[in-house]
Image (cartoon, rainbow, N blue to C red; front, side, top):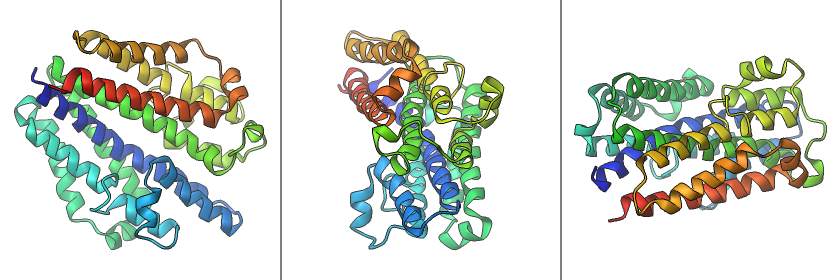
Length: 312
């Protein structure tokens, strides 16, 4: 497969997953902001999605206040923000158009119709329908794309690069979503594992579609230790770091070339660290610090994937 084609397929999947996960990050922040609390804490919560997505600096260059309306406007439909849901949908569609002959008609129709519908949306329309309903729509379109891909695409190298982009982006964003909680409410290592609000942790679980899974696995009250264990170390949890890195490592082994040995090694190292780790060990060192290190290492892995497969 041409490296250019593989690159488009990889980034097409990453942008679809990024749009969905941006919606998940904003949804959990929005739900937390509705909890009774001091006004300064509400403002602090809206800094979190900007900080964890690395968009605080460009945001403050355009807005004088950090609040729900400003952050949502910037991260949902802002055409000038490359990380907005609007921009991610546009980038996914452009990558799909560049490799139109390598994807199925069903995959193209999902991305194209999503982009066309987003173009017709504005802030007033989103507000009238409800912001949570909009986030649900974004997630549903992402689910529809993955369903179309799974049900119609040939199981060849093209689908492997598509899946690789999905799982690497998902791992990155699951770590960011989990860090929202600690970035806002438990920023200090000594605070990790302290008393937390049940409903806020339930919102975190719902943001990764993990509430029912948590109940099925633990059958007990929601605690931060178990939430983190589910989202980090459980290989049977589809959006966990462990599950995502297991998939990424297996895919990389299957498509490995002589130039991609370092990418395979880094993925295997990340997978092994998750496979053999214990949640008590992670908490003792600090969950925020662990997640920050994980994000750094996945970024390095992404760079190695680019160098090993896409750089001619």
